[in-house]
Image (cartoon, rainbow, N blue to C red; front, side):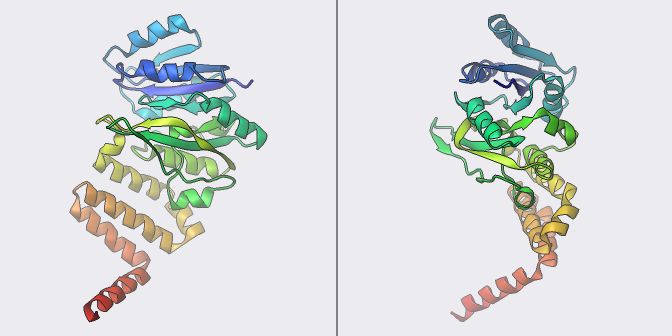
Length: 287
C-alpha cells in the first residue's frame, strides 16, 4: 500500500478545484495525500480547499506569494511530498476511479520508476474521446526525442527519480511534460497503462494549449534544450522534422516570418525532402 503524493498545481481555478480534488478522494487506492499548490491566486481557491481539508486531513495546501508558473508549483508540491510515488494532476483535469491503482500495479509488477497512461478528452459539447498518447514502454528515450508523448496527469513517478533529474525545469513555458519525460527517459524505463487514467478537460478557454504563440515558443524551447542529443542519436532528418513542426506552430500562431525561417532551416538540415517536393511538383505539372 504505497503512499502516493498527488500534486495539484492551480491558479485561479476556485470554480473547479473542488471537483478535481474529489476525483482523487474517490480513488480505489486510498493511501494518498493531496498537495494543492496555489500559484498566487487572488480568488477563493484557499477557501474552497480549506473546506475540503476539514472533511479530509490528507489534503495539504500551499500558496506561492506571487505567480511563478505551473512548473514552480509542481516543484513545490514534489519537494514537500511525503510519498514514495508522485502523481501530477492539473487543476482542470480529473482522475478516473482506478487511476492510482492501475498505475501502481504496473509500476510494482514491472519494477519501473515511471508509468504513464492513456487519457480521455472532454470536449466543449461534453462528449469524450480517446487522446492519441503513444503506447510507449521500456527504454523510450529516442522515441521521446523524436516526438512528444506522456502528459503530466498520466504520470506516476518515484520521488527518487524526480530528485535524481533535479525535479522540473521551471524555465520551460510550454510542452513542460515533454521536457520532463525526456529527462526521465534518459535514465529510466517506462511502464504503460492502456486504460485511460484521467480526463483531460479541453472545455476551458484559458488552457496553455490554446495560446498558440506560447505553444510555438515552448516547442522550440524544448527542442533547443535537447538539440545536441537529437543530433547525436537521431541525426539531421529528425532535426528537420522538428524544425517543420516549429514552423507549422508559428504559422498557426500568425507569425509568418518565423514560420518561413524554420521551414528554411528544415530544408537545410534535410535537403532530400526538398528534392522530393520538387519531383512531386514536376509530376503534377506533367500530368
